Amino acid sequence: MPTRPCWVEISTGALEHNFGFLRTLAPPGSELLAIVKADAYGHSLELCAPAAVRAGAQWLGVTSVEEGIAARSLCPQARILVMGAVFSGQHPQLIRHNLTPVVWEPFHFESLKAAAHVANAAPEDLPVHLEIDSGMSRQGASSHHLDPILAQLGKLSPFRVEAVMTHLYASDESDGAATARQLARLDQALTRIVPATRPEWLSVGASAALLGSDVQPIAALAQRFGLKMMLRPGLALYGVAPRFEPPFGQADAPYALAEAYKSLQPVLAWKTQVVSLRDIPPGAEIGYNGTFVATEPMRVALLAVGYADGLDRRLGNRFSLLLRGRRAPFVGRISMDQSVIDVTEIPGVEPGDEVMILGSQHGETITAFDHADATGTIPWEVFTRIAARVNRVGV
Ligand SMILES: *Cc1c(COP(=O)(O)O)cnc(C)c1O
Image (cartoon, rainbow, N blue to C red; front, side, top):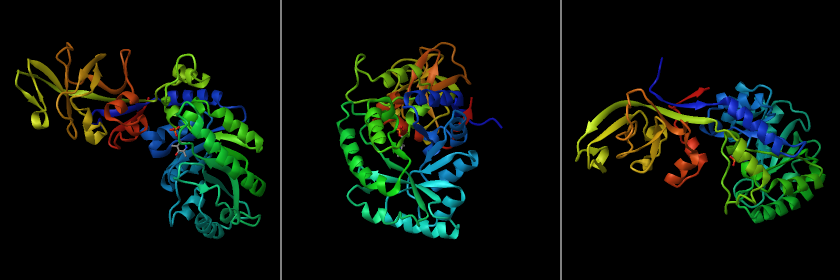
């Protein structure tokens, strides 16, 4: 049945292209773990996880066991890393679905051990990725408190440290100083962990690391410890290059970033339609509380999109969408399920006309950064707030 016309089109071809392009930026022998957490950043896990695998991804990254189980049903062969915590009662499912946990607390090993015992795991059967807190104070073991963790990892334990992982918190800062401090802490931790556990991978770096200047220092660290390098791009996979601060100039942009501006293709387009049109006289108020009052005769169009679809309510009276390739400003407040745009200057508008909320139309583009800048947030939040009721359609 046709649905209310507020939908997202996902170009799986663009995602495959982006993965292939990002691979060309990663050093030879390194691996890209495709981040598909949070329903592939709102782009649909169902569409994007198989596309990443078609493009050559061996690894997928999700937040939770439940996301991991969903990814497993779509991608039976992929390695799937659960990057957030595994919660009480979830360990048997983790093992049954062959999901790989990130561990950083001694108690994580206790709960895993019990589930591994029930599943008859042999010594070193269960790969884990050991996360080090190198400066974010969020997830990960402090490099000064590794003893109780290393004590869990003897030869007879069911665990094998497959990767040592950390998360960089300022790869988008152009001077690289914060990353250098983080990598120095990681270096200290590796000095203890590598001889004791012989990991295979060093898993460091998201999109900004891959497109900025952090790849070389990460690669140097990996090489020094004889580790292969794993990077974990998310946003770039969906066709958006992060912004750097301060911005790079034309001349000093890292090669990868300059290439990314040319090559990355947006994966998502968010669309709606004109529901109906009306001509209003001067003095007419539009929307809740009459925050917009017409000062001249106007033609306005009602749209099938509102804040319950993930359209930020703060865009009312301060953002415009694309209709027939022209900008049409929101007038009045955004309602829960509806909004109104001014089409006075756009001739020939009819019910059923397609309206671009985020994406390109006739050579004009509204980006996730445009939405983010208008509401004081970041593209990651713009994408992940597109509501579940908005259909994702593969194109
Ligand atoms: C989300 C996430 C990433 C991807 O970050 P992007 O900036 O979107 O590339 C990488 N690593 C971890 C641990 C994450 O949680």
